[in-house]
Image 1 (cartoon, helix red, strand yellow):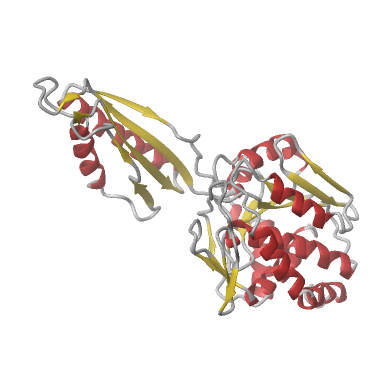
Image 2: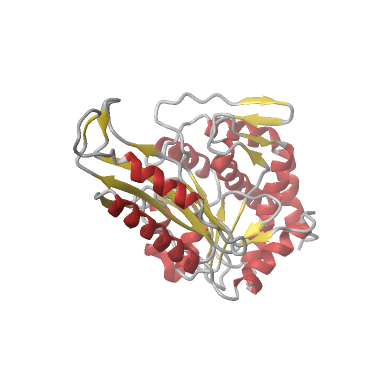
Length: 381
């Protein structure tokens, strides 16, 4: 496939358009797109799409921007997804800085690199005159960083017509074919509260909280499959001289094995009950976000989608291609719906979700060529 004349023309187009690609990448990055408020960036993407040879461009009711490029006919469409939103707050002024072969800016990698890669790949397909067999559906999704709201809406409305799903998010030299389960909890210890000098209650709700956290961090976590556990946030009374009536902490629990997630959820719940009973308090647990179950499809590693994607990585020049099952992105939702799905990315980047986020520039063009080859290869089924 690498030797096809039209594929070579597409690769040549990427090389010829490097300046345009970089300029557009910068421009999109500098449009802040907090999760749930992506429309201004989506409109910039839509404007770019209007110059491409697409058969339909539209928004769905959730705000996902969808572009369809018809194939010559055959199998079900292949979806390529890049999310529009970032983790940064509304009002942040973003200015990209290019130096030392890298581009620095909040959101430049997650996920603007892949938004731009999709745009550049579509233009390359057009200029090379490539007609894929299956239809290509390009989805620029919303709310990936918070609730997966965009992809959930898209898959719920289109599941029966989707043949394969590729989430462009993370990765560069490899891919993921499974999704890690993610459970978030906010645990509260509830007591009577009172002044520092009051005799009743004898304890602040922070006491069982501290004891529970110590015990939770003493749990031995499995390494294969690995269980990740983090207590990231704490809260209590509003003033210094009060015994907290409500002391809370959050838990982030993750694994590719759903049974292990369920087991550690129960073990933590038991610790909370014991520490609350010890001081005569109550426990209340809430879920900041809906639980995301582990998304593992038996036999997926040997599926056409995974094996072909792995072959594409090798063909483009990556050796010892990392193939894992720990995605934490829109591919999870596709996998949970039973769809053949992978996730990968188009540039090596670092500092995700920080103001110092960066991506390497020159490897990005290779990543776009990888994407073009994926678009052609996966639609051959």
